[in-house]
Image 1: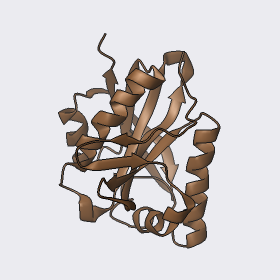
Image 2 (image 1 turned 90 degrees about the vertical axis):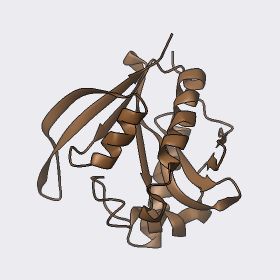
Image 3 (image 1 turned 135 degrees about the horizontal axis):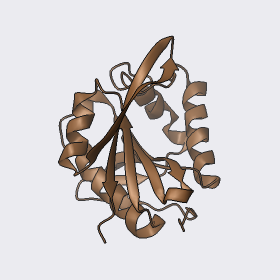
Length: 184
């Protein structure tokens, strides 16, 4: 049975990072991340172009937490908690399989610094130990080599390729799935 009660919101810390709840006061930085073409290249979601768009993203993330359907953390430097530069979390839960789908994104200014591998370990630990997940799945665009490398370095195993799984802005998109199982 999964524990999907995220109240109070669980802040997570690593050596360099604070993973905290995304708040309405973060809307400007959410727009900077979710509105960046490079950051969103392989994420089939509408870009945040206005503050209203960014606030809608914050509301969607908050509703997911309150409804027990998802949990996402803002990624910030531990010494600058107000300056978020990424979002990571469990975007879907599959109750019957005790599994969740993980997703993440960073503003390109923060790529290549090891932030995603550092944060993903803490988010996985929380998922396995606190939520009681048995498996974590990641779905990526097959063209996203950087995400594939991150997953492989973090011991995710290729699971399957699904051709034309969805359509976004008139383009049929394939998905690669990777899986990491809980070590008993």
